[in-house]
Image (cartoon, rainbow, N blue to C red; front, side):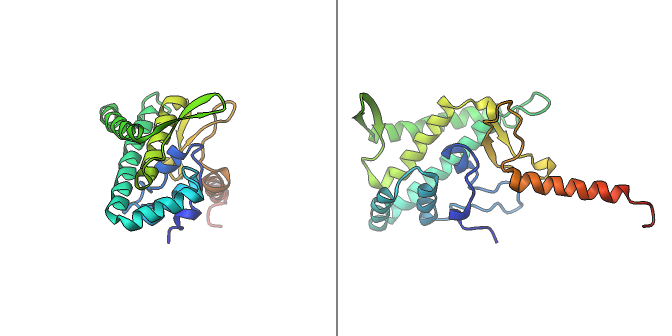
Length: 216
């Protein structure tokens, strides 16, 4: 049984990549950790896109207007899928190609821009310590999708997308995306203590089995 969304490890190195990882894509029947608005709200606090006070405000707004809750969930799922397409297109594989489709990624960028534009239209300018920032908090019912649209904007424009990696499925990994912040860019696994050690242990068992004398 898959773990609860609050037990989902945050390995992406950025909330936008952790969002992509809330959907298990490799299985025949993919498991969506953002199964309903309640799960989305709990994950948003876990990922740091909203705080506890904001979560209470969003929860009240969503209880008063259930349709807004489901619209927020649908918006976040759309952002998640668009981000997945864009980030896969940015990943360079061992042969120098990309893991995704550039045409699909281009269409996804248009949709992501529309999502961010809507969020920015609801935002306000705030002056803090001699700097101005956009605060995405004017409409509680839209706070979660707006903050997640902001996170998508941030990762696409500020992160080094050449450092985006995918835990190698063909080698036994889980397929989660993460930012490789290692000094030499050689990180391969989402978590060495998880996928990395499992694959290493499997390979060790296979080598030992192959080294046994015939008939033993």
